[in-house]
Image (cartoon, rainbow, N blue to C red; front, side, top):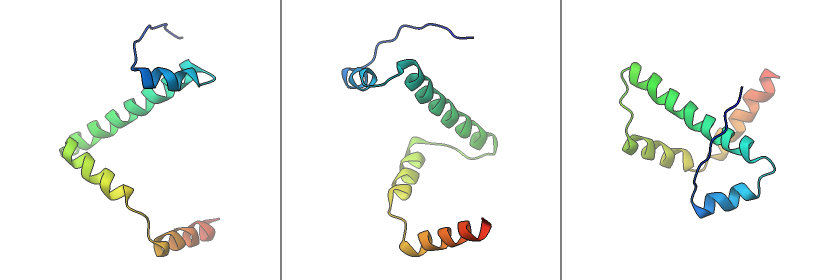
Length: 83
């Protein structure tokens, strides 16, 4: 089942959507990603972990750091071993 909605978006988002072959699919994918993030936050809260915007920003900064070559090589070795 599907439902039709009318939304307003900023110009930059509208421009990006205009370039998508299927606007409904693009919006659905983005909203589902947002929903998944909210579910993760809820699971963490239920586990007693307080989720804050400052904490999310710290993790984003950590994850944005380049992965050391040694770690990449070890990860590849583990994948090769598992195959």
